[in-house]
Image (cartoon, rainbow, N blue to C red):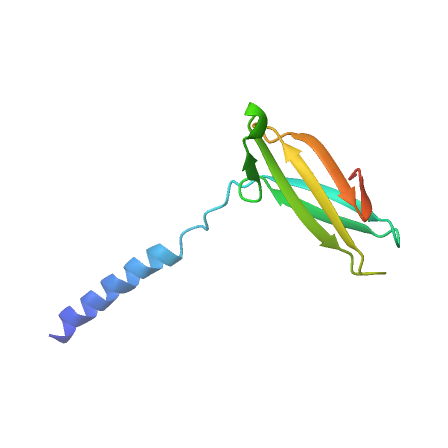
Length: 108
């Protein structure tokens, strides 16, 4: 009876090894990276938008647009809040952007 119990335990262990040892599933999420410069201290703060989960649909005006609003805060010099807003088209391309408390700068 001990031999069959051992075989069942080995079978269960192999099952769990297969489940937990498989390669991690990678997300296909795509991101839009951006940077803003604080109006108060000049610090560059980087942010990113997950194009799969951060966008809110906006169907007004008969066009399929997506909107996102983020609030960023630097950590080096001051704690000024910088609010950014982006609008994306149905292909997830930026069609409008604005910032308050800072300005959007090109990332290099």
